[in-house]
Length: 592
Ligand code: BDP
Image (cartoon, rainbow, N blue to C red; front, top):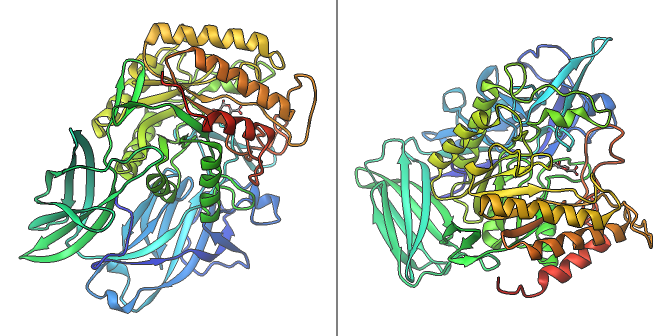
């Protein structure tokens, strides 16, 4: 799905700013076809939860409404007009005046509607967007709504981050010609020093298509025509981790010899290959350093913010991180584009987190229901999951920074039904994108001996908490167990392993001379212990600490003001471990 842009044939109007806002207390929600009777205003983009001094809004379960008036530029007569939401978390419905123009399920991928027939150039309309935060056993991620004794509604879920909701990303109005470029798929390869840029272009009825590739200086390096083909670039400059180089591909839709639409896209030429236990980028073994992250900051919740974007990438550069995982959902497209431009490698994860009812057993050891069953995670959940994968790949397939798809985080991959559930999803991912490896992120209690799905994947990502949830405070025992387990995975699967989560909650400013959990010293010793082990296991091709920064989690006794495993605080101050990581990650790596 193409991101809206301005071009000689397209115009774009940002609709971010302050919108009227109201919580819908009627259940089921009624479509809002009048001016919202409210004094509240909400910032877009931002999650709405932490904006107001009102617990009833923060913890509301169900629909909320956003509304503003929009004027269509008068020069858009004769053009198609679209409204585009970069995300509505988790379900969205869009009205232009009284007409429903779009509905969408899935909180982290964009959707749009052609509203040409219900607006007029130069005219104004009322744009109303309903957003629901409800999670059920058939949403991705899943959750559960409970009606309380007093008729209220509460929501629970199995993922360890606050269920921020609303319009956390931008909303746009854009124009495009009736006959236009509607999709572009780029693949890249290398033939000696010649880069090959494959293209596949969809239009809404063009006679033909022209394609031009320009280098970073704007010089044309290759041209082509037709809806599909391959451009050859002599002495290509590769997109390299830490040294991005981007070409620009421009596609023009032609009707009766005239250019009717033009769309441009950055292109990074690079190859990815999994060979034995190695992960190769441009034929060279790559070792991932970096983090699992969250879109999370004070007040905005998951609201996209370009200042945080710039600062977070600065901190990643400072610490020597060459990569991150979009744990546990697709991030804003601005983040992906920034990674493309700055040579940061991304493991791109779909929002399938919490598919593991054993997590619900909790510390009271409650017997969890089976994860995969008609009443719990079932065929309909898998359909939603498949759709989330389709939408992720449709959105992110052209980003050179994306080197691998992660189709789930910590599912119950040791439980009956896991293979039946995941096998079709792995096939679907490969079918949609045959060029990138596919991975999943394995949970600690699904070991190399009882996991039922790991062999389906090219790379195995592991989240391990020896020394934290297990053997807390006993790093010696933790080190022995971690090494024994990793040797088991290496031996049995003989493919690349990435440690995608390892971390310890740490209260900044809390110190001890002993191995005391929660101290800054313990976080550093914990990470160093993992690093010793990683260096002894050749199949380990990367380490991504959990987490880049402290983040907000759901209410409950298990967390004090959120998850504190950040190497940076929520406002991005370094804990002691940040300096230790920087020492390791900025040192030249020995050739393996
Ligand atoms: C893992 C999850 C992650 C949690 C982390 C933790 O993948 O989302 O935040 O553990 O407990 O289970 O800190």
